[in-house]
Amino acid sequence: ANYSGALTFKTRVSGGALTEHMRVSSSGIVTTPNQPAFLAKRNSTAAWGNSTLSFPTELYDKGNHYNTSNSRFTAPVDGVYVFHLQLTILGGTTGQDDTMYWYFNKNASNFQTMQDNWSYRLGSAGNGVEMNIAGTAVIPCNANDYIDVSTSGIAHTGGKFHTSSYFSGYLLG
Image 1 (cartoon, rainbow, N blue to C red):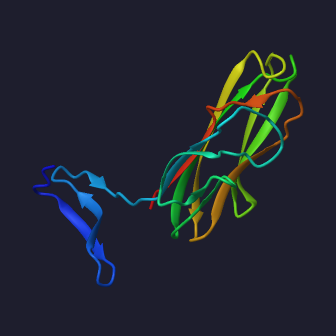
Image 2 (cartoon, helix red, strand yellow; image 1 turned 180 degrees about the vertical axis):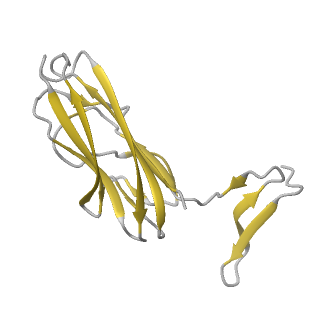
């Protein structure tokens, strides 16, 4: 690659080699190859419930700050982080209205609540209508704070969270 005119920022661990941590190209594009970020998804369709959601398949994880066993992101440094959740839900009890609350949790406490209402025929036993809901939260974190997502308020049965559901996040600054 031609890095003519680029400004790079490097650090060195005592006695080690220089490692690049940021680059500003000659056209002003800033890249930070070590910026914490992750994307995780469900690996199987699962019945919905009122609980912490599981996203055990990591699609990427810069910095290894996302834990697939408990579906938590742990902040490596103080800063403001952006998190996104998309849930694809299938079916449920035919013709029943419902409300689902879903939460971005910080250190096991609700930080931001989202709400979704539906009042149409969802189908039955996880078949039929598919619905997507999504939300984003901007959350200030201290180093070692952790973020996960959960749901509550689901009254009817038979619905499923689809494998296209995902949870992602990154350090904004």
